[in-house]
Image (tube, rainbow, N blue to C red):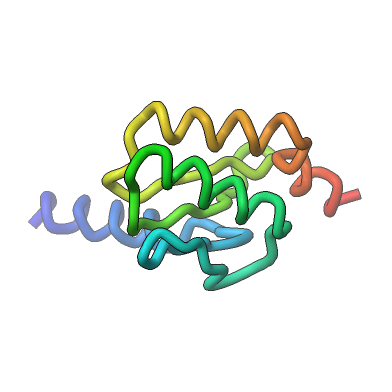
Length: 102
């Protein structure tokens, strides 16, 4: 019973993380499902994922410690994740959660 409760709590926590945006790759094309991102970031997602051969998956913007961090579904290699994080922080988009608070 305890194991079921722990698994249920983990699933609940994972599904209730505050996502500021959700982008899904469908046929290699990034599409916004929820929230807002710039067209430049969508283009970067498409370019990076094409270079890595990724045709489907989900990228979320999750608020962590007052900043927006990227979270990836399975299937995104760590090198692809890091390239997208580099783009995200280089353009200052990760600071948006903090800017909205003030």
